[in-house]
Amino acid sequence: VRGCMAMAQSPGNKASASAAPAAADQAPLAKVEVEDLLAAMDDFVPTIPEEIIEHYLRQTGFQTSDERLVKLVTLATQKFATDVLQESLQKSKWRRETTRGKDRGDDRWHMLTTEDLSEALKEHGVNVSKPVYYADRELDTSAGLQE
Image (cartoon, rainbow, N blue to C red):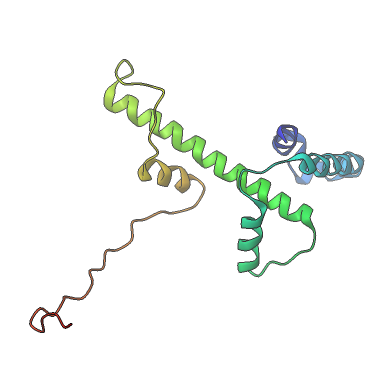
């Protein structure tokens, strides 16, 4: 799977208008890369169970009988979650260093806060905001308790 991630980030995979004539030369290579990705996904054991991904795909109206497609969405979901968590960790470390200084505190322990997570998600286009607090209606104390 690590090779698959490197494939996705390789400069040869970026499309441009000037590379159109060379696309015919790269077509067999792209097919090999796709076949390698599909072969690597067979051995891939996701952190997020595929059943959960299938459930949310069905909720959005997406239906497929191709298990490879579900594995591909699972891989993309795990990559997204990993990236967000890594960015959250970096923000937590930065916040900790600015508030406590490098010499103080134990670097082995980090706490994931909503602020760090929301900042990392904001970089990926996901806005997290606190919900508006709604109090329940006032209790009618004049009626008393009925048994």
